[in-house]
Image (cartoon, rainbow, N blue to C red):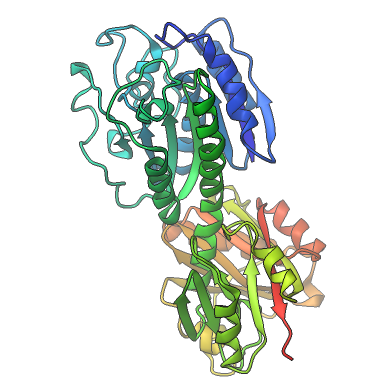
Length: 466
């Protein structure tokens, strides 16, 4: 996770805009455990935007803090380049920011940012990747100028086909009765809990492609305390969203026979199949996570209880709680992701879609494989290697990847991954994920060369039977 701190004031119309410099620093301080990059504003808005673009990392989750709303230009353009039409931008703001230089009453750029992201702002600031109006959802907006009306659809619904959402938050979306440290307050705003609930609802359904928090002008200790509680919670749910999107798709792509949702747990059991992912409890995006629920479920089936714990588990103390109850560590797994279009092509081996490899009754995972409901392909270099690929609403998971010992380090796996990426794109899946044991260094290296990066890690906790 990277925090880009941009103390820009040039785009603001606020009489107290100089406070935005301290506000950006305080916001960055509230994000725990991160790499922090401070971008010094340039002499022009275009120069600052260029500096922000240069500071953005090649991968990983990015939080941008301002400064005025103009700091969001390049982070959102980065998300557009990555996700294309699968991206939606949810604009939490008291103002629509949809003016042009011709329609703006103030002439201030922070009221033109979203219009510029649609390709209709000052020419020197329009990014190389722009949004369509249908990709924008306004939330909390309650002040619009005449020139802003009708520019984007009047809808609070994220468009169909969206798989990722960029969340922009101008803190004036909050009601001034509970938060007044902004330069352009408007009555009738959201309460902090309402804002968090709306962002959480997005994070439960979509990958969060980025988060921006702007327009903080420190003016009261009460407001600082409000942000001390709100900002870490927003960061937590947004960062966990991508992990949860992978985990819920992986659970569907590798479906256990016996699945029960109870008290925030997804309880999974498959008789006769020893794989951990088929016989472990996964935390849902939110819940109470009472360990006794898991213990009872597996005890009734004569099995030791096992829980998967990772960043998608929003119960921060769950790991320590299980440890105190005698649950033992049971292996760590790294989840790696890639954009399918970034997986390099490979030559030298012919890869085929060999369905007989996984529909035959003698396959050890036949109970699970026969239950896969989404598009799937079993790719193989006959006699040398194979992998199962499962597509699900914009993502494709790679499972059961194996190269026969005699063919290792000969390009077989790279050829299968390249074909998996091509197949994923044919299914409308531009993102890919796979899971690998943390101590499998050759596999980690192989996948890294194929364009995959480590997104997060998870581990299991096991409660031995008495």
